[in-house]
Length: 403
Image 1 (cartoon, rainbow, N blue to C red):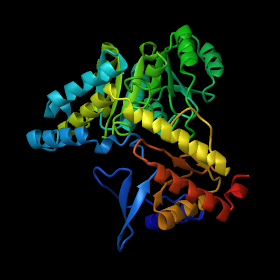
Image 2: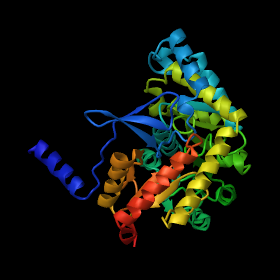
Image 3: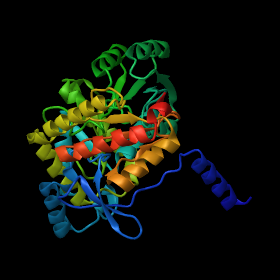
Image 4: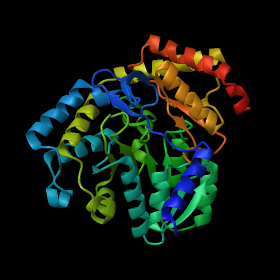
């Protein structure tokens, strides 16, 4: 077989469909977020980032940077292996205690990313609980889907955010051990799950509730504990999973829950046992970020104000965006080639970075620009964004593509 020929043919098809992904060469500038530098091959272009998952700019917060630098200087750069081999440092233990406290749980467990924490936790639960069945929201993240698949447990999909459909399907499952997996904030449409109703259905059927809060931790609730904290429901969720790589501005994932549940996953999950631990400096920086956002609501308040301002300006210009309760603003384009073109023009001509979102991240025909205003975007930057979008909306006839 001509392997390279096959690879190239597949890539050519991807490009012809408009779904080939091109990464922007960006250089974040400490203390300047949301400004960044873009390498275009010959020079550096100043750009404003409008699509970062560093939702609150904590990746460049002075306390977070200082904690990482200080710990690198005192501990070095790496963890030295898995926690079983390299040791269980005080920085990991302190961070896990902060996370358990954040969600009102007995224990927490760190992973190298949110993807890994979902994959490892769901695959372990599904594989190790005898005769388990996992009921998964049909729009769950790829990490959850892969974890469930790897577990080889029976899977049942329920309609997105439809707790009545979940109830019917839990009834149909019968007396088997049941795990219900869903998210709080769905990252592409920005919609928020009816968590109370889902939890009540889980409790009625004796199902273990598993929620992914990666796009909500740091962002919602008086201490940043997520939508479950904001709605007073965290104590009724069995397992809360989150990330350190979005609103907390660092990297890593985690789960929280009861002591037996967390120790069970720690003891049986290959995704934890055989993976090198997060560097102590990363753990220290994450701890500083979590502590800051537990005490400060300034970042969340400013971010919410900017989201409202951008939405209002989009409405005035007649630029359609999906309505939701969250901080995520999907501006719908509906065509992969046009979506890529709009993104390129925004970068080249306006110095605005908004990455196009296309298949398989979203279904074909729903391509979009995913805008995430942060607390550090200013009024002039908002004006510039809306002026650029309004100009391109008319120039490129996007309305026709969406229709």
